[in-house]
Amino acid sequence: MTNRAGAKTARGRLPAFKNKNKELSGLYLADETAWLERMSELIGKQRYGDLDYMNLQEYLLDMAKRDRREVLSRLRILLAHLLKWDHQPRRRSGSWERTIREQRYELQSLLESQTLMNHASAVLSKAYEQAVKLAASETGLSVDSFPTNCPYSLQEVLTDQ
Image 1 (cartoon, rainbow, N blue to C red):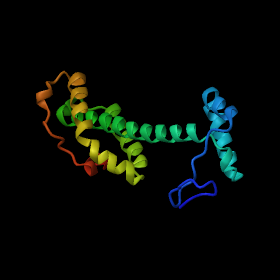
Image 2: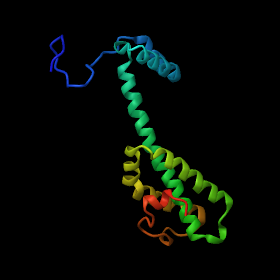
Image 3: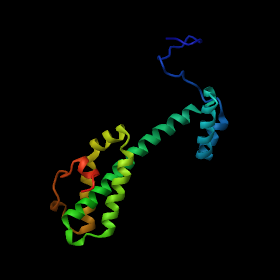
């Protein structure tokens, strides 16, 4: 498929636009929130040619990476607390319980996205390895005190028991 200028375009994709608006590029660097509001306004007015595509692409990729990092971080914290809970029952506290509940709630919300659910499944063992180190340093127990492989399924991690 070709556009009016004769350039090939993929079906269903927008043609490539150059950053025509230097003001928007500067706004992105100076005030990201104002830039986002301006992008939203331009989209609402269907002024697609005026969008700051270069920075918009970077921003969207950064958002996706941020969400993935957040899933890994929350899994790591939750798993560390579950390990402490299971391996030091006499030291259980309301604080640990609140952290477990809070991390579960936040993860359940994030994992409404199937993409992030798939990511959580993919990084569960990595999060567990990191959680073991955290739990060991916080409890004074040896890393060898904890199972080598994650003893919890993702469903168990996310579910109140």
